[in-house]
Length: 177
Image 1 (cartoon, rainbow, N blue to C red):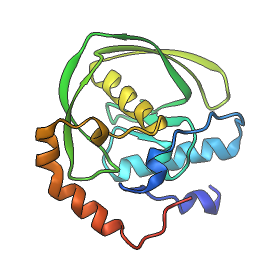
Image 2 (cartoon, rainbow, N blue to C red):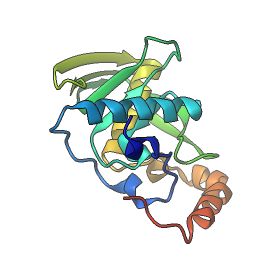
Image 3 (cartoon, helix red, strand yellow):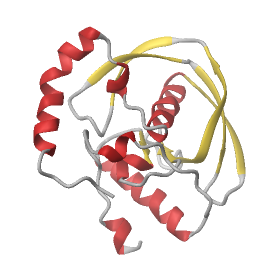
């Protein structure tokens, strides 16, 4: 793995890279595959089920996920877009880039997504329940949206202290580029 990718770390709120929409991926090469591999490492270190490239400091449209945590269940989606969103369910969600914060969000319970794989080949994927929620969460990241952008007033009150702490911890740090 290239040294540049080895240095990638989890980006935390309020780093501005989290609010920049990711650029479409146009080059499918070893560097992209290495980035996806590093993202899986970061996701597992944080005990997460999904990670979008902006959360690793890369403003591109790529995310990785593994809802079961089982080896062999890793999924990578490049330039994803939803073609169907069906049903609705409200659940509490957290985010690896916003530790200590949970928000109740309404998400579709079934989604159909068109994307590309790491070789640039088209894939069609259908996910339900947890998988559908993960995909919607990660695509929000690719669009520069965070769970806190959709907080209810009660979620704002409940998370006020944790968000202030994250902002205070970030002060003085240089934004990642």
